[in-house]
Amino acid sequence: MQAAPNRTARSAAVRDMVVLALFTAIVLLMAATPIGLIDLPLIKATILHVPVIIGAIVLGPRQGAFLGAVFGLTSLVKNTMVPGVLSFAFSPLIPVPGTQHGSVWALFISMVPRMLIGPVAWGVYTLLHKLLGRKAGARTVEAAVAAVAGAFTNTILVMGTIGLVFRQAYATAYNLPVNEVIGVIMGVVAVNGVPEAVAAAVLVPAVALPLQKTLKRDTM
Image (cartoon, rainbow, N blue to C red; front, side, top):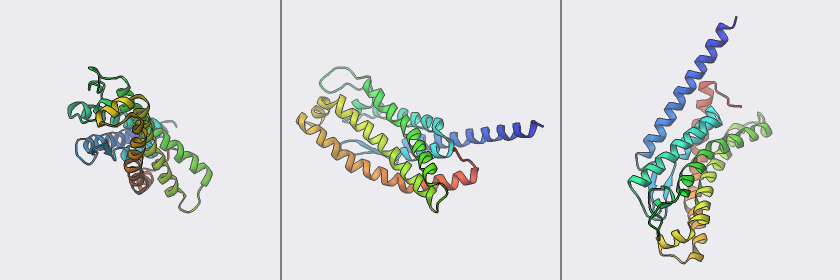
């Protein structure tokens, strides 16, 4: 009597592993092209958070954290191999301006905010689903708001940590007065973070909800 349920559970586990592998490949592919990490004067803009959020909504928070870790590793590798002005904040192998060595905080910035994107998005999505239930259009709203929450988790934690830990180094790198750094960082959050959140709010519901339905996969 237990054979059929066990086969179903194994099939579901294999299916989820295949989908996770697919999303991992998408993150790696995007990171290897200008689409994933776009070089801008003050920071590398990104839409790599989008597959991370979609993966979290479809598969769950642990898988979302894994995809975020892959995102973080790609950021660390790219900033190490092709360093830019701000790469010291994303790779501990790049010397911090004014010093001869890197900082372990760069590893935190590369990894931790990215690993939190998926779990935060999944948590918001789950909470909103409990509040909104099966109202018309609720899933789209839930996924869009969750996407914005995930995107801003990345932007705010990354730029906030840079502002707290690397304020002097940031000022040195960009030849700014130290007292202007926070204002510049807030500008980066507005200029880069808002479009990244809007992109996520549009793309995540469009992809995650049909995929969730197709796979008959509801993480809640």
